[in-house]
Length: 225
Ligand SMILES: *[C@@H]1O[C@H](CO)[C@@H](O)[C@H](O)[C@H]1NC(C)=O
Ligand SMILES: *[C@@H]1O[C@H](CO)[C@@H](O)[C@H](O)[C@H]1NC(C)=O
Image 1 (tube, rainbow, N blue to C red):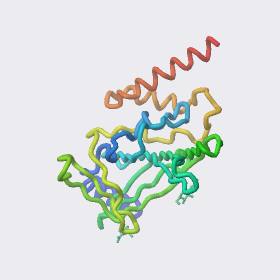
Image 2: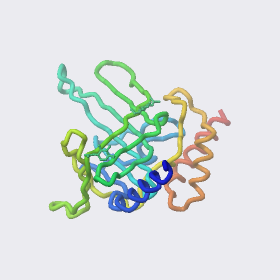
Image 3: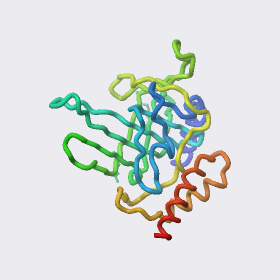
Image 4: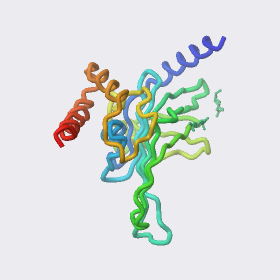
């Protein structure tokens, strides 16, 4: 019975979520999911120029999200903190139109930077299941592009997201980094390297090449020093 139900849910999800598929980004267009935001080889973030958020959804029920937000600092408004969050996992669109995002708990990362406190950044795991009451895809009146509005569980509508890529820009959807390595550990993690080899065989994921070349450069440096 359970598998019949799962099948039903996934069929419903697959048919009703087509309009979600792709990469979406907020107005600044500076934050995008994929290897330009989070580098799983080095297990570190790549800081975008401006804050923003991005979600990607693929046709197989996987999602990825990237958040970079400034946090107001009431005691010194000229010195905000920054927070970066990355998660990936699976999503389900229910028959009532609601949307749930279930992250791979061990893979999510958060970096909180408080430059004016003189602290180094706090780099931790991040695991936040998200439930949206609904979503709508429409053509934005002013920008003339497709836009995605996500209605949060509270009923509030999240900042609009605009369509950036038809083929979602995502890291491999399997578990990448069960053990957080932070910024200390530099060597390449075995399973990640394998995942990248797999991705290289998939021509749709050409952007991995850049990451792979970087890691080769890193290895060459590692061995010659
Ligand atoms: C929609 O359906 C899901 C799954 O049955 C349920 O968890 C959720 O609460 C429902 N949402 C609304 C707004 O009714
Ligand atoms: C991640 O969050 C989910 C939902 O809140 C929770 O059920 C799960 O235990 C969490 N996993 C870890 C490893 O923290």
